[in-house]
Image 1 (cartoon, rainbow, N blue to C red):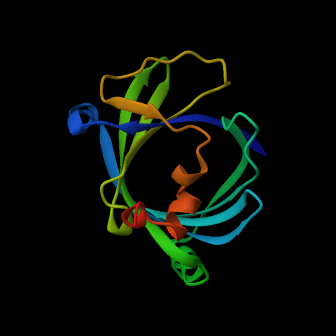
Image 2: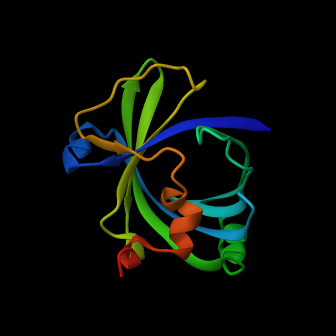
Image 3: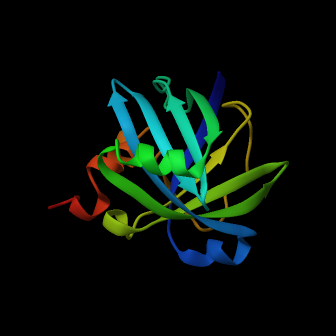
Length: 159
């Protein structure tokens, strides 16, 4: 199983869009969420994926992840099993140098108004440059996990 290491940040403006080399739509839901473990189904530009993620490390940087491409029709059927809400977003890909890339998620639907950037790193110690459009780091903040947002949409925060 792969160990995913990533850092997450809020985004302060839309200047990142000028740097994007690719964008695509994502729809995802959670079949299971329990004690930090999740089973997610995703459709990304018509391609299905099933992902299992384990509990995040104490520092919030890493977690085990297993992902497999599945037929889009199977992904659509699995979406019907998803608990609570779904996540809808547009993901923008931005080169970060040294083979790294930023993935900036512009959330839609009940999470409209939330924009987050993440960078996946080979290790927690890997240095990376921080673009001017980054804001506050939210790595490890559970309220910014997609699984949390599916059950507690951004539009309901502060209400």
